[in-house]
Amino acid sequence: MSNNKKKNLTPTQQDYQSFAKDREVKRPVVKNCIRAFIVGGSICTIGQAISTFYMHFFKFTEQNVANPTVATLIFITMLLTGFGVYDHFAQFAGAGTAVPVTGFGNAVISAAIEHRTEGFVLGVGGNMFKLAGSVIAFGTFSAFVIALIKTLLIQWGVL
Image (tube, rainbow, N blue to C red; front, top):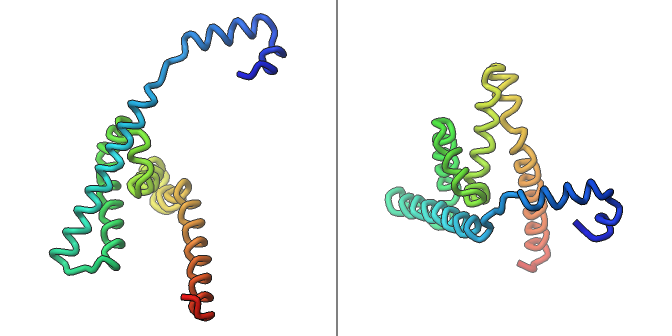
C-alpha cells in the first residue's frame, strides 16, 4: 500500500494492515513460474509430437497440419476435463495449462459441464461459450482484419 493511502487510514486500520501482511501466505512465485514453464512446454512438446504423427502417418504438410493438431489437443483436454483429471493437473501447473490452446478447451467444457443440469439447449448450449465466447469473437474479428489487410496488400502488389 502506498504511503499516501496509509496516511489516510485510522490507527486501527493501520494495525489491521500490518496484522494481515504478517499473516499473508507467501507465494512461491519462482517455483510457480518454473512449474508453469515446464508444464506449458510439455504441452507444446505433446502438440509437436501430434503434428509429427499426422505428418508422418497421414501425409499432412507443415502448412495444413496445424488444424488437426489443435483439434486433437482440444479434444484431449475436453476428455480429461470430463473425467475430472484436467482440473487436478491445472491446479498443479497453474498458468502452464491456461496459456496453450488446452486452456481454451478446458474453459469451454467446464462451462458446459457446470450447466448440464439445465438441459442441453439452455444449459450446455447456452452456457458453453460464456467464457470462451469473447476469445472466439475477437479471434474471428482479428482473422477477418488480417485477411483483409493481406488481400489489400496482394492487390496493391506489396506481397
